[in-house]
Amino acid sequence: MKEMGMDDWLINAILELYDYFRKEYASQVSSAVNIIIFVLIAIAFIVGQHLIFTFLRNNTRTVVNKSISITLLEKVIILFSRLTGTLC
Image (cartoon, rainbow, N blue to C red; front, side):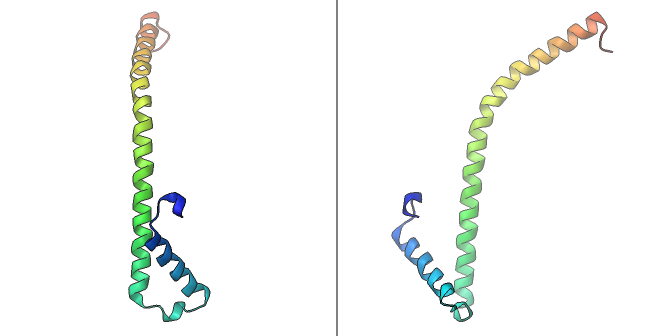
């Protein structure tokens, strides 16, 4: 977890929660702790989605730049096909 850039306090909190569940104290954990766990999971999900979308946005820009030349090539082929009568 430390390699992922998590702070020590967060690692300790996660380990304490894991210890509660491992010792089967989960029934004694208050609903506030369950809400905190839910919020942490939601934050991790949102951060993950942001990283994925950032990666995709950066990589699709190169595809879009290439697709401009592909679109131009497609138009030339369609024009040529219509001029030669092979495509109606």
